[in-house]
Length: 230
Image (tube, rainbow, N blue to C red; front, side, top):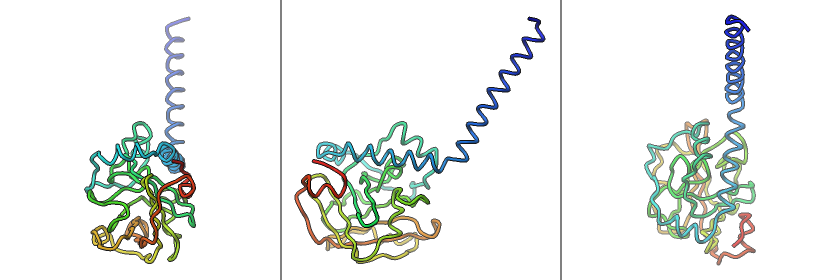
């Protein structure tokens, strides 16, 4: 084989490799939303299936990120990073059966936490006491992260668990607020849950609140609402 033929073959191989790379990049760009949704769903499922009293106790001792200004819109790179090495610390679970919403509750609002479920918004919040605010991303795909909040109605039930107890809340408020409604995060005397996600394409926020109506010891029967077991 002559030198010219060898150079031609090498160029052909390089061109083919580049073509394959460009094709793969193009496919990722075209289907990044679908891929992101798949990874997020996988994150949610894997985190929920490993949720136990032991993991909750361990994760509650860790340090979360509570700086609202550092919360970014979810994107493909953020989701991909969470899939590679997810450092989200699960401390419970959330369920709203009427809109088929079941998610892990994570400590703080780190990128990994927000790409996995609902993040706690105050360092001192305690489930079942005062205001328990949770934030989550709104995704265009129904059923992913906090997207189902758009469909909830007053009177429906919100369930929270730390794997020791199950807290049942009844929704009494649902409204659109501006992004500066930080009062929704403040603690309250009455035990309530506050759920917050984006509305109107990120211009505003959905705010949903429920009041605590019942507390039960966690068992295999009442954990079914989360698709969990003791």
